[in-house]
Structure formats: structure tokens, C-alpha cells
Image (cartoon, rainbow, N blue to C red):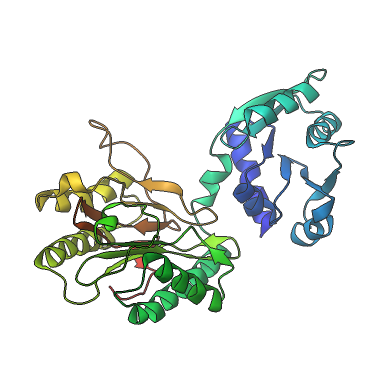
Length: 362
């Protein structure tokens, strides 16, 4: 699989006129090489594929990245910056692009210092590998489906066990245990369990607030499997909800349904957002939906493309969806002092529509 991804990356570098790319983002490094260690970088040219890592990961790198030539980092005798200089000189490079979003000022200084007496120039680049990652291949989709299934099974098992006297923190722990028992390697992100007024905070942290009776409880969670993330949100209520809950919940669910019925290749991302936002606004809650509709999901929990509103006057521009994108669709309404409702599923953009991957009951 890494060979095909290398081919696609080399084609992308050619299109941008970049002779070499230093890949330092952990997710991008894993996507291109398969290497899952915590420390390392790749140097990719039209003919060379080098993997720099330290002694802790030499054996692992050999197993996970057989298509790459290994160069061992030995600090302080042979640090990363020196290895890069040696490789660039050996390959006769005059320019090396680096991932501007993933290289710190200190790291850039070290690279520039090491390359000072060479003809090699550092060139910032953005989104080269990320653009490739937006369309998922068959191997990625299989892993994502596994992570999503674990998440669905866990929330389905835990919700019937919740009791009003339990705290948000206790519920979050039950959900984590349920995902790990079903095969999750870890969490895609810290689980959100937000009860009552706390559910008006889109990214609330679980605390000692009891779940209570008759009020909204937002649960946002995801299983991590082989580096790939799931993402699911359900809003539930223990006991009989009030009339406002029914009203808000139905508006949000209808908004999400409009989006899932309309997602397809070629649809502008901002148009997808508008499908939900216009419905919520027509119901009188437009100013209570403050975040974007959704985002891509894969090796990062938030990756491209992004479903968000267009800037005024820019409605006819911006990125479009493509077959193979896996998107979260998560409209919400949040009312200070009462709480909120958010419903989120993951959807795969297919050749002519979308497939809803999340199966947990709404």
C-alpha cells in the first residue's frame, strides 16, 4: 500500500514543482510509509524514499516500512538536522520542501543551521500529503468501519446502563471501557458527556454533574483503531424530556437528514453546510448553531475537507466533495441555561450519494 501512496505523492510533488519533501507530521508520515513510531521523518524525492528515526524504532521501522531506506538518528552525534543535510547533499538536492504546519520555529532553525554551508534551500509547503489523505482507499475504509462499529456497539451497550445519579465522568469512563473491551486501541479524543446546561457547551469536559432526569445529555465519542478515528454524537435523555427537548431534537435530526440525503460528489462543502444551517435558521435557531457542520475523519480526528459556511459573497467558490471522503455530519443547537442537542454520524461519499457508516440508534 505504501508503494501506491508514494507514487501518488511523487506525482503531487511533480505537479507543484517540488524536488523533495520532508514529511514530519506523524499522521502524514504513517500514511505514506506505514511507520507508526512516535519519532521520525521522511525525505521523499522522485527516486528516493528515506525514513529517519532513532534506535528505539529501528526494528519497527524495518517491519512497517520495507519500501524505505532507514537512516538512524543518534543524538547528539548524528541528529536529525545533520542526517537531512547529508541526505540532501548525497541526492544532489537544491531545494527541500518542509511541512510548514508541522515544523516548529526551533526545528526550522536547526535545519537551516545544518544546511547553511550547502546550496540547499528550505521551501515551506502546505497540504501536500493532506490532500491525498482526503480520499480514503479500501484499506483505510476497512479500518474506519471497524472503529465505527466498535463505537456504535459501545454506546448501544452503555446507554441502557446509565442512571440519573451517575456523574458525567462516570458515564465517560463506562463508554471508554466499553470501547476498549470491544477492541479499541484507545480514544479518538477525550469523551464528551455533558448533562443539562453543560450540554450547551459544544466541547464540554465531563465533570461531577449528575446526568439527572428529563434533560439533554450530549455524548460525543470515538474509538481509535490502527491509527484511524471514529466520531459519533448522540443526545439522550433519562426519563421524560420536556417539550423543548422534543422541539430542538426534531429540528436537529431533520437538519442532519437533509444533509445526508443531499451529500454527493461535486457538492460544494459550504453548500452541504447550508443544507443544515438554512433549516435550523428557518426554525428560529440560526444563531444557536455556531460551529461548522462537519469535517473529514481518518488518521486525524479533524482533517480535510471541512464542511463549513461560506464567507459572504463566496458561496459559489470553495472545495467540493469527492467520492472516498469520509465526513462527519454534526449539526447542533445550543441554548445557554437549558442545554443542547447535537447528532453526529460519519458518512462515506460514494459515486453518486453517500453511505451512512454510523449505525447507533438515534
